[in-house]
Length: 454
Ligand code: GUN
Ligand code: FE
Image (cartoon, rainbow, N blue to C red; front, side, top):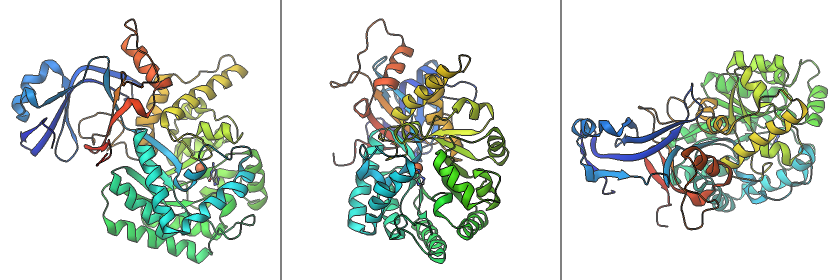
């Protein structure tokens, strides 16, 4: 245990950090807590966060000594909450940064189904999944909502790897009983449902504290109505989270209309199959109408905004402002490998850029600020996944999921000048920082970066 450890009423492992903490709240997209002191108990929960003038009082109450405090360097170091990636495909990691020359449906056929089919091989799965989880943790993703593949055992392997490396996650065994374009990569209806049941039972049985199952119909084009129905009723009767894709590209939406002629729109397809709940997160939603956004708001359905992917696959421009104005929960997703970056910082930048492009078309458009995308990447993501009682910011009672940012690492990708205000420094990190600046990452109080043994 680190030297900043001392006996306390919680047991033997109160840790105390002193310095700057930057986070979001419901009322403030970015709040800087300078000269503050934060305590984490042995269970990884934040037990206090106060200004330093309360140090003596806190030291008496929590029984720590001055020398137990880990002090951050002012201006050069600060904590932010761990980043939340609300949508990422772990098995598409081998393709990340390549295969981006086609639109969604052709991209799925030519590149994506073939790479996912390889995950029937457990050894390949374990090796690849270890790489992707290390990569996302290294980039400050403390919570991720993963799609895996149709293969139950290799999806369980992904859960083992995530648990081992200490990330918080939802993991979905992908369900798809239709695939005319790449028929070796699909399941039978009964198999898809029974394997989802087996996946949930086995994962629950492993009692991993931070890794939970999520029911995952791939999207309307790869699931029969019967499969959607059975997954909806399975998720609802077991109180499970649900993820899928919705209204990502125009070509996809046209195909949906043909297959589900009795549904009013794409959202109605999911709604008719009981898949829109307050535990549902839907990726993209680029073309959702105001009426569909109202439905999402009423049902408590969240949107995972994946701006890099939407641009990379030329899917479209998601109007985040309109979704937020409709009071829909919005988080950010990398959507690797439709998105080419595993970094939620990149998702923040792309999300700003998309609203800047939208503002070119309409001069009164209210762009997203860097403070707002920071909230989407942290508190917003935790709300989208129904985890905001546990993570998302530095409130007392939440788990300590955090990234220690260091601006002056020797190979830092940006410069800090004496004239920079603390806000300038944070903005430079948001636009230019990367994993080199994320020197330590904590999930539920446990240091998960640097990796054990490295
Ligand atoms: N729609 C259905 N499957 C996928 C996928 O793997 N990626 C993206 N971006 N959209 C999808
Ligand atoms: Fe996706």
